[in-house]
Amino acid sequence: MKTEHDLPERTHYCYRFGSAEFDEARFELRVAGLPVDVERRALEVLAYLLRHAGEVVTKEELLREVWAGRITVDKVLPNAVNKLRRALGEANAERLLTQARIGYRLDGAIERIAVGRRLVSQLELAAGRPVPGRENFLLRRQLGSNRGSEVWLAEHAKTREKRVYKFGADGERLRALKREATLARVLQESLEDRRHFVDIIDWNFESPPFFLECEYGGDSLPAWSEHHLAALDSAARVALFLQIADAVAAAHGVGVLHKDLKPANVLIAADGEDWLIRLTDFGSGRLLDPERLESLGITRLGLTVTQSVATDSSSGTPLYVAPEVFTGHAPTVQSDVFALGILLYQLLAGRLNKPMVSGWEQDVDDELLREDIRLATDGDPERRLAGVAEFAARLRDRDARRQRIDANRAAEQQARNARETLARNRAR
Image (cartoon, rainbow, N blue to C red; front, side, top):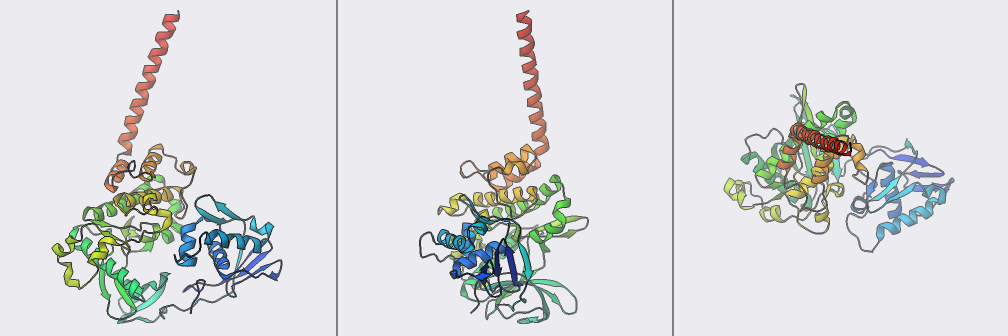
C-alpha cells in the first residue's frame, strides 16, 4: 500500500535546514545527526511543508493532504505541529512559522538533494506505454495526480496529435469524471463560441482505469508562468485574466458553476502572436438547472449523475474558497467571483500560489485594480460583485473610470481653489 509521501512521478529528496535533516526516501528525521522518533502524521506535515518551502500552506490543505479530510480528533493539526516543533528542537522550530488564521510556513534557506527514484504510477501507467483501450496513443508524461486519479499527456504514435487523459481508479473518481463529462456536454451544446473551453472527445466509463479523453489545451497556467509571466506588464496580465473571466461568465450564462477556479485549472497556449486561455476541470462543478440536461438531450449519454450535478457539496481548493462556503453555504456565482478575485491578485502580484493576506494592496499599483479586487473578494457576499460579467465590465471600463475620477478630482481642486481665493479676498 502506498503512503502519502509515495506520490507518483515524484523524486525523493533529502532536505537539510539548520541542524535538521529529513530523508523522504527513508521518511526519517535527524537532528544534529541523530534520528528522532516522531509520529507519522507529524512527519507527513513536515514533508508537505518542505515540498512547499517558503509558501504559506493553509490548514485546510494540510488536513486534506495529510489526513485526507478524515479528522477524528479535535485540534489534530496543531497537535501534530507542536510534536514536530518539539522534535526539531528550539532553534530549528523557529523556522516553522504560524500564519494567523491561515496555516503554516517553513522559512529560511533549505538545501535539497535528490536521493530517490521516480516511482511508478499508482494506476500502473507509465510513459511510453499505450493508453489502455486507445492503443494508437502513447503516454508521454504525467501532468498531475490526486488520490485515485491521474492526468497524463499522450501523443498519437503516427500523427503526433496530443491528447490529455484523465484517469480514475474507483467509483468516487468515476462519478467525478461523469460529472465533468456531463457539464462539458452542457457547455458544448449550449455555447456557440467554445474556444475558451477544452472539448471532451471520448471516455471510458465501463472498466478501470476509467478515463476522459480530452483535447490538448496547452500548459497549465502555473507551468507557463514560470517562463512567461514576468515578461508581461499589468495591462497584458489583465487581458489574460479577462479571457478567464469571459469563459467563467459564459459558463454561468448556461447555468454551470465551476466551483474550483484556480491557476492549475487554467490552460494557456500560443495563438499566433498572442495567448489563448482555456478553462478546464469541471469535475467539482454544479449545474444550477438540472432540467437543462433533458432539454439538451444529454440523457442519451447514459449518465446517472443528474441529481448530484445539482447538489454536489465539494467546495474546491481552500485558498480560493469564499468565506460563506467555508461556513456551510452552497456555492454560488459569487463564490466563483471570489476565486477569480484571488486569481487576478496573484496574476498582478506575479506569484500564482501567493495567499491574499493583510497588506496585499502593496502588490497592486493601480488603484482601480485594487478597488476591483476588493469588491470581488469581499468577505460578505452582499457587498461582493454580483457576477463575473460585472467584474469583467469594470476591468474593461478602467480607462473611462480613470477619466471620470480625474475629472472629478480636477473639479474638486478647482472648487477648493475658488474657496481659498474667496477666503483670501475676504481677509483682505
